[in-house]
Amino acid sequence: MFCLKKGPYQIITSSSHLDECPDLPVLCGCNEKIPQCSLVSHNETCPKAIIPCEYNTVGCEKRMKREEQEKHNEEAIKKHLEVAVKRINNLQLNLDVAMKEIDALQLLLPTNQVIMLNKYTKKKEQDDNWHSPGFYTSRGGYKMSLHVYPNGNGIGKGTHISCYIRLMAGEYDDTLEWPFQGEVTIVLLNQLEDKNHKKYTTSFDSTYKSSQRVREGRSTSGFGRIKFISHEELEYNPVTNCQYLKDDSLYFRVSGKATSKTKPWLVGASGVIQSKC
Ligand SMILES: [Zn+2]
Ligand SMILES: [Zn+2]
Ligand SMILES: [Zn+2]
Image (cartoon, rainbow, N blue to C red; front, side, top):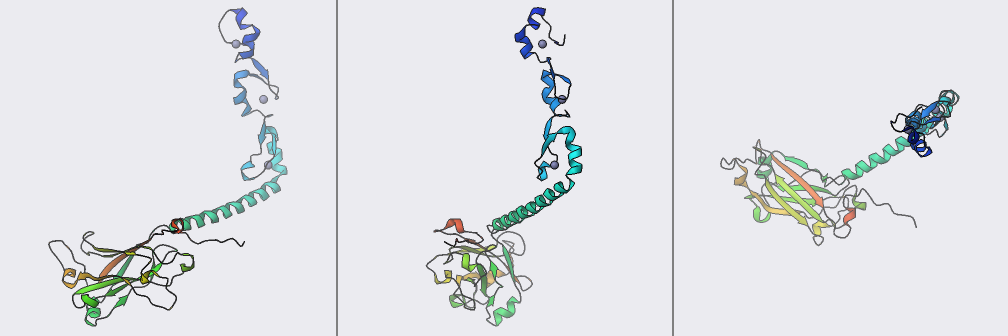
C-alpha cells in the first residue's frame, strides 16, 4: 500500500480518499510512477516534459521534450546564432534609446558654472568691462554670459562692482521658449570658506528687453545689479572671515533656472518633434 497516512483501512481505501491522497502514484509520460504530490517537482527534470528551447531568451521559439534539447542544439546552431545576432542588434537599439533618454534627463539638471575673473586690479584701473565665456543654463538650455564692470558703471562707478547677465545666441534657441523666463543667480564666492558668499538672484520677466531672443552677432542689454558689491567689501574681513578678492582674482558661480508659465512641460526638453501633417 502506497498511502503513508495512518487510519482505519476502510477510510484509506475509500475512493474519496484515493482522489486526494498525495501519495497516489501516477504514471508519468516517462514511464515512471510518481506520487501525485511530487508531479510538479518531477516535471522540472522529467525528460518527457515539454519545455521551451534553452535559447528562448535570445529568440528561439521552439518547444520540445526535454530529452530533445541536445539534438535540437546541434541542428539549430545556425538558427540560434542568427536569433542571437538579431537580439544583440535590438539590445543596441534599446541602448541607444536609453542613452537618448539619459541625455534628455540631464537636460533637466541645472548647470553650475564657476567663472574666474583674473587681473582684477588692472581691469578696474583701466575702467574695463569683462564678458565671461558663454555658458548654458542647462544642457540644451539658454546660453548666457556674465558681464562684470570691476570699477562699476552708472551710479556704482568708482565704488562698486557691477554684474549683469546677458542672454546670447545659443545652439538650442529654436526649440526654447521666448522670451526667456526664469531666475539667474550670480554668486561671488568667499575664497576663505564655503559660506558668506555674496549672492544675487535676478528674475527674468517676459516683459524685459533682456529676456528676448538674441540673434547671432547681436548684443543685448543685460540684467543684474549695478551695486553688486562695494570695493571695500571685497577685501579680507576678519569678523565674517570673508575675502572675495584674492590673488587679484574673483570667482563667480552662476546658475540659471528656466521656468515656463505657458508650457511648463517644455522646460528642459531637448527639442520638439513636429508631425508633418
Ligand atoms: Zn493516502
Ligand atoms: Zn516523467
Ligand atoms: Zn532552439
